[in-house]
Length: 233
Ligand code: OAD
Ligand code: ZN
Image (tube, rainbow, N blue to C red; front, side, top):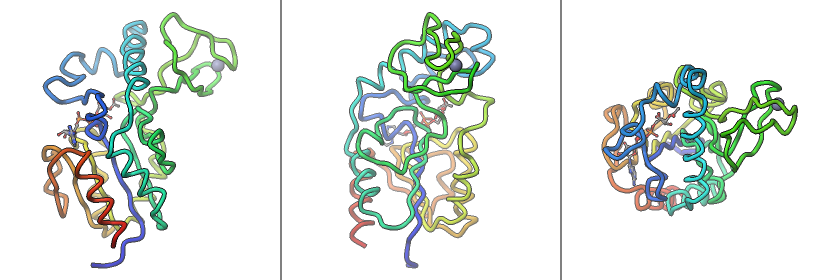
């Protein structure tokens, strides 16, 4: 095997499932109880901002109540001990990677604990409710929205992500169903760059055949095992 120096990791809701946060596409997932078009699009926010704010108020409260699990801790260990390049791209809006101690994390779909002022284009750490149109701490406008990338909006930092993928030696996908682009296309971009590809998931993702290797099981077991192996190498 060629030496691995640059690792890109993509995480999804499955890595936080064992922390008690609901995934999206499971039978008891968030998209079973809510229609995406009602709560996770700019059109929904324009039509019924109160409903959208309530939905993300609940997400924010759930994130604050959750704790990192051994999978987050293992990636934080990798971040501390891996001397090569590493980028943890997460689709998750929780802060469990950071609370476990990981630093090289990029939130491509935004963050539950951030509010974005559409009047002055500033972002603010936010742990309270956004219902009732609280004023922006910077400009005072009642123009705060969840700092979440909704369907139809461009995910954050795509240039940085694709640059990392172009240099990757290893791409690892953890706990994501592969249903949402552009994230679902990262495995192909990594392959095009000549990277090895590994999937760690409870069930096979939609793009499973694109991975060189798939390991099926709970993230709290698979991720610590994989990290221990990489650091031993
Ligand atoms: P999904 O709910 O689509 O997929 C979660 C994946 O995690 C599934 O493949 C499960 O098999 C797997 N899984 C569940 N429990 C697990 C466990 N304990 N260990 C390992 N894997 C487990 O969630 P995402 O793929 O993250 O976007 O969804 C992608 C995006 O769709 C989200 O970021 C969100 C959503 O709409 C936005 O809201 C913009
Ligand atoms: Zn403002």
